[in-house]
Image (cartoon, rainbow, N blue to C red; front, side, top):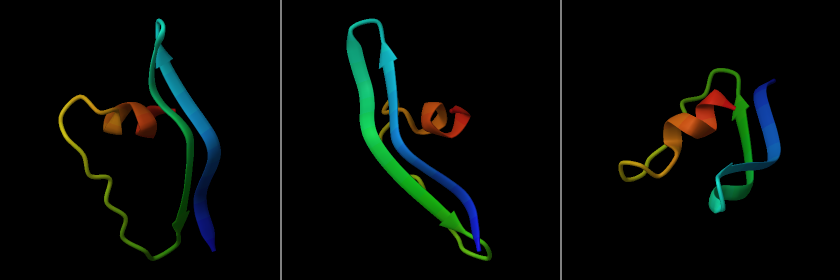
Length: 48
């Protein structure tokens, strides 16, 4: 069962594009990690 699914996600700050065309699917009873350097938009992606 799909718990969370998103496609074509994008976030921009002014004229700077943080990320675009992001797709994600999280399945029930799965473990998912979002890994990246500081300031790359991990928390922002989860807030969308």
